[in-house]
Length: 282
Image (cartoon, rainbow, N blue to C red; front, top):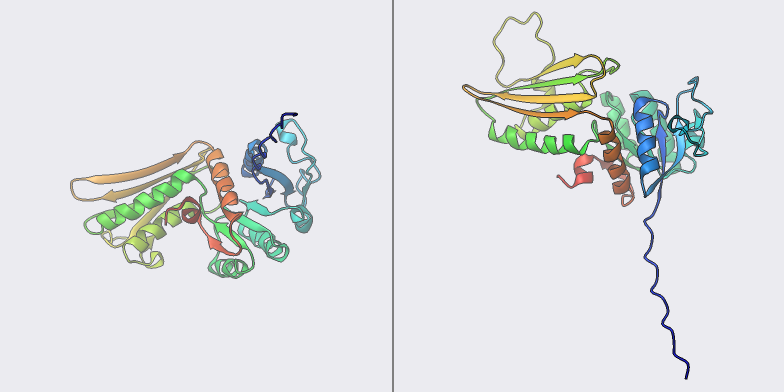
């Protein structure tokens, strides 16, 4: 009687690939995102956007890596998003709003690292999040977001007797100050103290001839060279001080955090999220 050969076990399902588009594809951050996607096992680049008039329009999105991927850089938002499930956008507020309007229409989710949104734009973002899923964070770095958690804890413990100052430093090309990350740090601290940042933030002291308001949160900005991003929060008491610092030496940390946000969005339908949601820090 012939021996029955058992069937081979079923193959383990492969990881689902997420189709990603990148805005600002020819910029420093855009290229870092594209390189991270290309190196990822579970993400694939399907779209690349840039502003009209950019010399990169029409070029292959991975040409800077010395190879081609078949994805051309385009200024046509709908064309750049037509095959995408998620857009990653680290551009300017006006550009991000235009991209998100198309995303909400096409059902494309979005990871937004753009900073400098106005109050009106933030309200519009909230409305768009009712039609698609958005992760919005001023800093996608895992380390920065863990730092935010530490600041929350420190602020509660040091609620009285300590003056709070936030110092940030970035490259010469950064256009907004204070940085979005510094403002987020201020918001987290103010919330932990039961304050509203807009009522206690101090952004400049030139011409002020008065003692420091103990309830204020001060901000200082440095711009120069090629600094990627440094943030230090000082809790200064009498006889001691505590400094909580985060320093970025490469934009790759933002890119890797963005891909974690992309993976998180795979399980979301609609809504506004932040990196605390992505990392389970709430």
